[in-house]
Image (cartoon, rainbow, N blue to C red; front, side):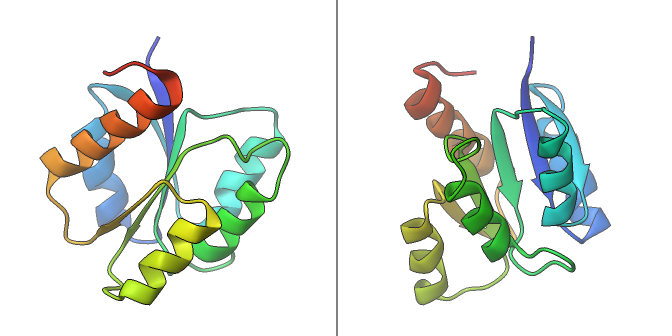
Length: 128
């Protein structure tokens, strides 16, 4: 069974690109904001990882990470933040809040896959 990765990004092109890059190895479920992810989680589903943009409507990446990492039910879910914000303070803020990785857009698909694989090695002691 494939691991499930949730994606939150308000840019449809980025959602489609991430889905295309990752769909051969993972089950991908994509939303246009963090609220979609929280609603999906509230139905009893638990993904293996979340990839989130920072700037999104309704529930942005910062609020999503904080909600998840403060939750007893969801704090164990690994999070990779994927953002166009090129600011060291922003990266540090997310990493200190509990995000496992912070990558810049545009991104190299091979690097993204390597970082995802490394997160899975750390969390699940396995690689894909």
